[in-house]
Image (cartoon, rainbow, N blue to C red; front, side, top):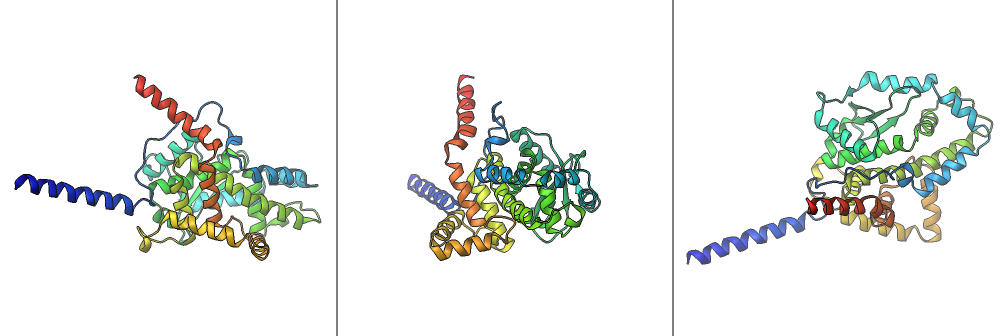
Length: 315
């Protein structure tokens, strides 16, 4: 009788464990062991999205763009953008938000780069952005609303996304894009065909986001974490905690892609995209899901995981 009761209790515990794991299968779990050393062959070109490369070359070939770039370096506008964030935010460090500082340090170790300054700024809009000011330490700004919305893994993925901009030397182009968005182009020697420059800059901005999602993926080393970030930015809040599914969001992305494949859908998608600074969250999720299964990603991470496992087995 006692043995039968023990077996029944064990069966119940197993059923609960199984139910719990299946219910949370679409939610990023606790951090697992990561590959910190991506090897000597890792560089910014390892993560650049093809569209990022294409539109960067297109920008570099524009007549008059050299004068624009020279004017950005050390410009008053650039310094204003930097000083405003330094004066209004909280600088993260070993004794100031140390958990976030450690997330930054680990992400920098993986991406093989020096840590930038990281500021937390009070803002109800869940956002983060990067500023690379000529001759000064680059900085990342994270809004308080974003910290409240994300768990630690997701927050680190956001930080890694911003680090991707610095790893790939996006700074000057981002500054030019910021000046366009703030209406400060009068501070730049913009030629008569400013609309052409702005159009090309915004195309590049959207493609650069796809590159930086790859940086986030390399640090998270779990596609569900990166896709969860995108899902929460699209429509997440604390009241929905535990109710959102990455799998359902990815299926939503497939549905959108099918709808946009028709002639009318293609036209509407492109018309909408031209108004955006970022690609649509569902399409970014689809992109990162595909890249996480690609040979390029496996070469970067999976082979290092195998080597570390073999070394651990020998020891």
